[in-house]
Amino acid sequence: MTKKELLEAMAAQAEISQAAADKALGALVDAIAASVAKGDRVAIPGLGTFEKRERSARTGRNPQTGAEIKIAATSVPGFKPATQFKATVADSKAGKKAAKKK
Picture 1 (tube, rainbow, N blue to C red):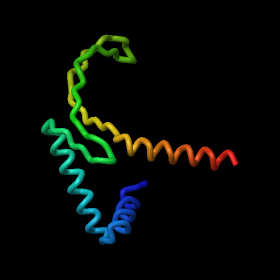
Picture 2 (cartoon, helix red, strand yellow):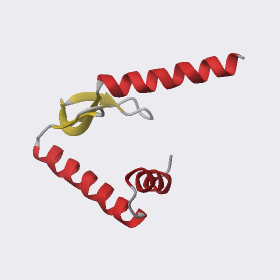
Picture 3 (cartoon, helix red, strand yellow):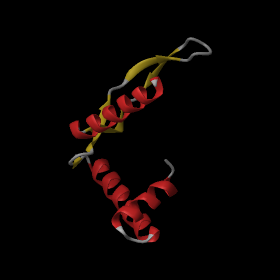
């Protein structure tokens, strides 16, 4: 699904214009990104939890030369899906597999 398709679906379901849906989606993404960047967890019931995760420093290898290189510690965004979201996705896959076998 592209952003355009998502906005169309949001607008239809919420009975709002696509411009309003775009503004709402942009505000949601910006708010989540800002909160996670500060180190806060953002939990959306039924969808999941966004959080900042720390990756420790480690030693890697340059694949061309084989030389060891130090990879610095870094922060990355993480997402843990909610149980309800995982169940919905699992059910949709099971339905598709059953339909293909017929």
